[in-house]
Image (tube, rainbow, N blue to C red; front, side, top):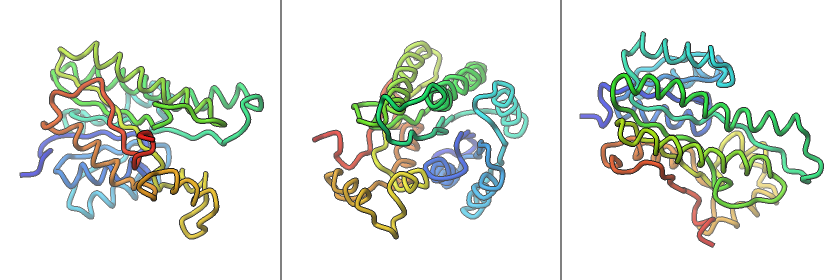
Length: 255
């Protein structure tokens, strides 16, 4: 029997990268998957990949900064599948590296809104539904940037520290309500977002080589490796884990 048979998983930012890999991983474990994101074409591609592994899923176009969109997302999830067992709040954006004094108010608002407000708003609607059924698991995407400082991306670092703060505070509030809340802290993961930072794998830029070398294992991580951690945190094996985060960074933060 599949690990998550008859369960329902919701993933924001499920149109590519870590979100897409996690959607497929949930489907392989028998969960019905709701993929949320702004990009319709890519969202439907994720659903097609879910179906390719004999899974079931739907795409719901959602802007996580619009409360009405998230309300609709939860309502459609319940009307389609009847419940919400897992939520992976993964939608986020990067910060172009630059000097602190060159940062703009517009850039600050954009990054903090997506990376922090989006998680906060999503959890409000997710938890309200999970309270009705007396159970649920939430996993938020933070980063190793939520654990340490990194020069030239201060707003991103602040946003990911905030995600961990939210995760811990909300986990404590709902610990006795059957709802667990945890986070994952990826290091450098091979995704489209990473390609925007360091160039594609084919280009093998100096920046990419430096980044790989900075990880003791000598490579970047994969989105499937992050997905495995999310699956674990949602599994019965992690039933005593809440308010915590799992770091998958090839030893980066151990140095």
